[in-house]
Image 1: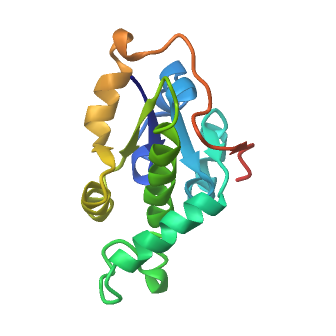
Image 2 (image 1 turned 45 degrees about the vertical axis):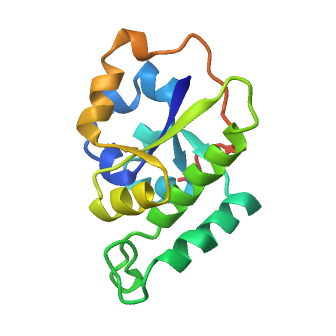
Length: 162
């Protein structure tokens, strides 16, 4: 089983331009439209990362995610502070991908890569596999971790509009 990695902005911003444009990232990594929007300050470095389009399935998972967050909990989303708007979407996208992969003969393991504690906690709570930046970079340096083929997984892709 190969893996697909959904990158959070806090990981992308800590990667070097060379890491962001690496073959491993081009072949195995995706960002959501919301992460692309947050990363518009370094858009040229995001051009090689494929962007996942929002879908009805993702929105259904997003509604479920948002119901799990207490209104007083601002660790994941704090719209008044302009913090974390892409985080619930990232988790919902992972859930959508995991659901779609169940029906595939050659499944991809969907993994979220983030340094955000709240994202890590909620992802784990809903069954999404999570990696830290350090764990992810170790995979990218392992030649046996690369694949010879890669499709776009279960998502519809859009060109990065950042």
